[in-house]
Image (cartoon, rainbow, N blue to C red):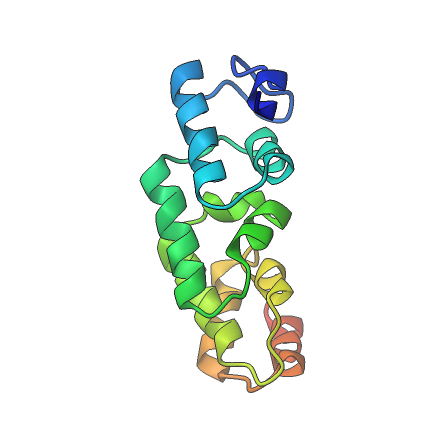
Length: 142
């Protein structure tokens, strides 16, 4: 028995009613498991956000791997909203991180939620390390 049985698929305390029913929620949850999430990780993601469809989940994992992130499953478990960001934003921020000499996977979580104008300033400045990113963010208008 998977942990899905412990989750009330009709509603979730952390977010509103989903746009899909229990059967579709079960398919999306099962897809997380098929993508390499263990039950605890899948529960964390499922309970945090309304899951996108299976194709979007697979695409996001593929994008993160292509950008060089070591463990997309851990990244998504740590930052479930990453599944909801537009692909363009994830790729843009991922490329910023990939270009840094001192990159780490956790840096993505620190810039992806920044306002677009701040992200664009980082792209233009093309910093070579994380301190350069922080300097650009410090100068960006809020």
